[in-house]
Length: 532
Image 1 (tube, rainbow, N blue to C red):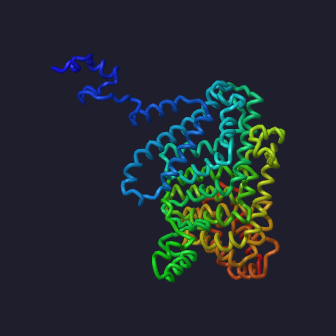
Image 2 (image 1 turned 180 degrees about the horizontal axis):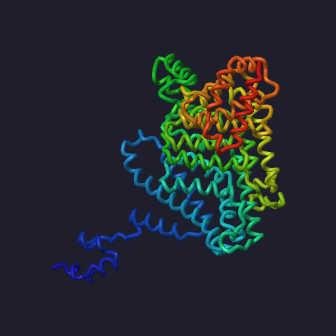
Image 3 (image 1 turned 90 degrees about the vertical axis):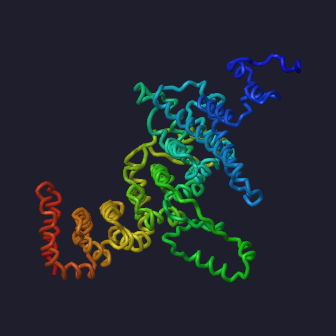
């Protein structure tokens, strides 16, 4: 008998595990494999360490590494190795797990800081203990370098690929940083306000707004693209994304197909500089998260001004009018309509920022960006609202033809192109726009057009009582206009008998409970009867 077999070996299961020699026992010898070398055990240990990690810089750095690793895997050419997908799938899955865990931990730290104590333990901010809040430490880490600044755009671009909970975490972190300076820390927990911490939150929010504005295209692009649920989007290398609905070809596609047909060989076609790829179809939850993030940007006058710039309207606003509000899914369409309402009429959507010296905002911004002009903030809610309404009025007047003539009448108010919900909410938005004092020029343009009047008169005859009521709220503006154009007067005078008879019975039951509606209908009928 070989004396080596008499060597001391573990005799019980506990000894086998404790000695980390389970594999050695079953295999009859050989070098034991430590548990920490197993990929599954390594990932589990890493996830456990992430769940207890309180170092924001370490968490952000790890998230950046995960995102970069996923990007590197996507860029590898599968043709180089037929089994590459099989080999990289577990690694890709693990990378997603660790990224999701880090995002969840960052979100937990930020939200717990608000709800559990008026002042967060400084030990949790190590090694960034000079920052008073988790949000400030997170922003400092996000803006540490030019490469790090692209972390958010990359996360937003890959939002549809992330696990379900991770998508919510990305949206929550983004929305939190845009509003964290609006509520004083500790109000919900102890009723006390720490001025220094409150100012830190305000400076953090101002700095994040500046960051979003600086990288507006890179951030808002993926957010808008996230709304394309169940729609294939063709993305050219040198052009903006264009939606392809129901398989119809757009002009750029026709040009591409013509160029392809002109090429005699597939090899020549593959050398074309402009390529077209199909983006993955987004799911409903991605659309809702992107809608929430889009609306969060509308809270700030600076970001709203960037949105309505002529260079951004075609890419970031018109898709809502052209496609998003008419999606067949009710949740998606309703979310898009709410976003459209805030774009067209931002009243009440702005945030009132506590008064903070503008120079102090630079404390939350790394030196690489602090030299740039700081965004002006407004602490007066009424003045803030007036600023945003004035910006919206200028935008609507400038884009009047594109918005109202080419889209509202044709795509949002037409029964042939829009469903019930879209037409009803669009009428509400339209009446709100026309009745807003700052939109006087837009109102006069709209109620002076005979085509617009015909559109509203057709909606007065709709089978839905809700739509007829909303149509009446727009129709009354045409009638009450003291300076009606001749063509508008002619249409109203020629149809006054039918209109008076119809309006007399319109929502008769509502007159008993709504005095304002009763008075307005009586005024409209009286004005029509006097027309010649």
